[in-house]
Length: 166
Ligand SMILES: NC(=O)c1ccc[n+]([C@@H]2O[C@H](COP(=O)([O-])OP(=O)(O)OC[C@H]3O[C@@H](n4cnc5c(N)ncnc54)[C@H](OP(=O)(O)O)[C@@H]3O)[C@@H](O)[C@H]2O)c1
Image (cartoon, protein in one colour):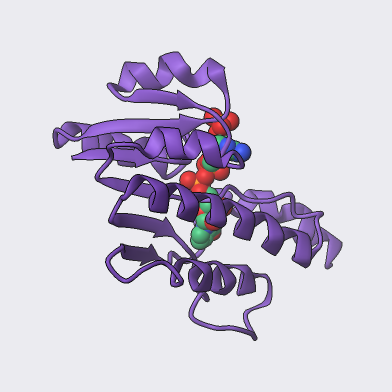
């Protein structure tokens, strides 16, 4: 299958790409950094260099593809909750627009544990909001939400918050 992966050579996308390429799929990886192009190509994937905030770029990249894996990178945790939800939602809207314009019928969405709860889940309310946004897509578009728990390798980035809260 032709698959587009967002998330560059990040924690999830790199091993995912390696596995999918091994299985014979044609993989395109989106990165915002042109310096990653060679590394992406060395894996056996096509590099699409651009920004997930750019709906036109996403539409161009999604053309002729069978499945897209869509993620949103961690926002700056110094931003307010509203800003974080706004950023996640606007990227999700870009993905939705690109999928609608290109006729893709299969999406895999990186969500989070807690996304089933509209409230009482702290910052993870963003994940609920995003899933609701995707659920507005027409029914013929199949969406697989993945709701992982915390990734140990990202724990260190929370140290400033943990310290600031004593
Ligand atoms: N940590 C947890 O415990 C946890 C739990 C549940 C869900 N999650 C989800 O997992 C996500 C993180 O996934 P991950 O660890 O695979 O990501 P990651 O390792 O942080 O990699 C994400 C990559 O996306 C690329 N990127 C950043 N901004 C971009 C933009 N504007 N346009 C295009 N590409 C951009 C960056 O690479 P380039 O510089 O090459 O563009 C970045 O390295 C979180 O955002 C959250 O939604 C995390």
